[in-house]
Length: 114
Image (cartoon, rainbow, N blue to C red):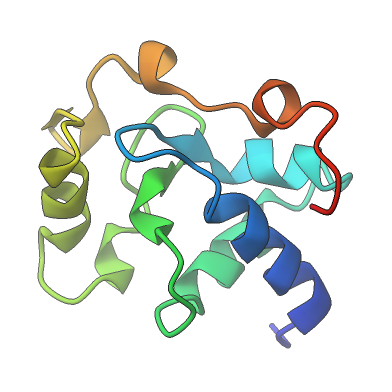
């Protein structure tokens, strides 16, 4: 996929707002950006974000699975980063996903510039 730098940068802006110890999904970011069917493109943006100072480890799939883990250096790097923030992971899935889920549609409601 060709890097759509404008869309990718919007994804990175949202991702940078995810608080430590919380997680969101590719689809939630896509929906917030007005592209509800672009979760896969958000994933591609996360795959390309390693030199962008973006906490990509906080973005998981809609069920809380660490589907992007193979894009981090080291086999358990994504899990370790989450656990350093207090997020428990078991069997490559965020424990208490619904409680830790950060939804940009509600969390960023009324916020300008993103």
